[in-house]
Length: 120
Image (cartoon, rainbow, N blue to C red; front, side):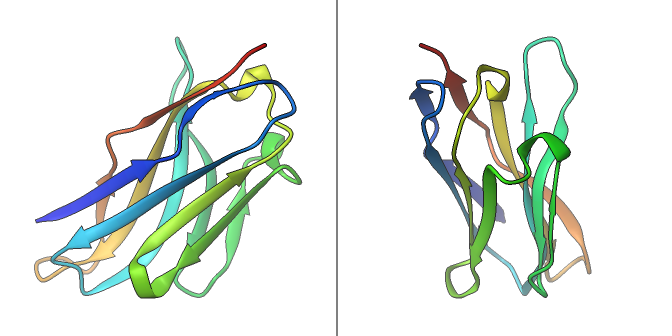
């Protein structure tokens, strides 16, 4: 059994900052990658940022220079530091992890989602 538990969402004014956290727990052998996706009302889910086990990062173009993804490998946790937030960043943010488990070399898991609302 694997769980991804997210925290840190909320309401923030334009230009403000938030930090999202996602902790993976359960029957995990190793983490191949972790990342954050988001889904705004009426839109599809899109990749925001991802980080591999080697530390390589990837960002969606609209968040480059504003968002930073990082990880705490010892605690199987990934963070998304969001700065200079804009109303268009409003969405439900989902944690995603590609994990090696006892039954799979790379299985995809999702968190339950956390709401981020940017509004004055």
